[in-house]
Length: 219
Image (spheres, rainbow, N blue to C red):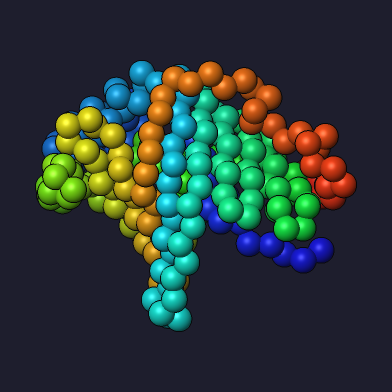
């Protein structure tokens, strides 16, 4: 089986807890992230449009892609140009459109990488953090927070968050990897509390005639 590249698949956790799991000494950052946490706790579901801009410093190349993220508790779905990713909180299905193939894996919230579904909750666990200042972008005041993973074995060494000061919403996340690849996730649209059935977060093979299923959950 040919190994396929999954854009931002490895980590996804969601909108419930406060910031009690964080370790920090920065009071300003603590206050800002507290406001962010309280904001997202009011949303039962989220639909967000986003862009991913991946830059490779070694090859001096970049890739940009857009997509849509759906969140409901611990469930998520990500629609990209070439992939659809489903997760019901226990199982994850990654559907490759061109090959009409889906790979089934067990969902591991402790995986090593970061993906778009973490943008609203990345700060909640496993990071030290600090406030790095305020800028004005697009006429909005943006507060900036820098996260450093406590686990030094992570493939990334820093995550930068941009937060809208007025709405307490995360607008941008930049993940800086040790291999020189930096991924920037930017929110382009946002809707909350839409109706989303649980089945929306499960892959339905009946809607993909002829799909090849590769079940990686079995030994």
